[in-house]
Amino acid sequence: EEKMDESAAASAAAASVPKSLMENLLGLLRVRIKRGVNLAVRDVRSSDPYLVIKMYNQKLKTRVIKRDVNPEWNEDLTLSVIDPNHIVSLTVYDHDTFSKDDKMGDAEFDFSSYIEALRMDVTGLSNGTILKRIQPSKHNCLTEESRIYYNSGKIIQDMILRLQNVECGEVEISLHWIDLPGSKGL
Figure (spheres, rainbow, N blue to C red):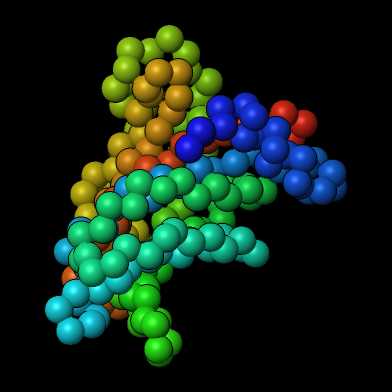
């Protein structure tokens, strides 16, 4: 299937946003849900995981991956950002055909450091230049240092989040920013 290029995707997204919202919109946060690692087993031998992200009134989900506690989603979920201090919550569920889907843990992350890095207005750095490092602490769900780095003209943040309220499991994600024409911008 053909992927729309980013500017076409941004214009399409912009067209669906009411004008009043557009004036308050900073842009789009594209969350690439890469993979789950060592997720909890919720069926007999495995789980059928999918992941839901939420931020204020937005809720998006990945596809279900059958019988895999190390699912490779590699899916992009795109949130409209009005306030850089909002928290994004992420919950993994086990898809059940006949009963309510079981929770397989949750995590949350804030992207205020990422927005700060985007506002630094850097250009022409060499690929892989690290702009900021965020250490794991009791105030975040990071399992290891998260890096915000420059790559091919874009600023990206990678994170590995430890799922809470569950016996095991991590989720790997990365953040990408899309500027929207006509929005307030950063």
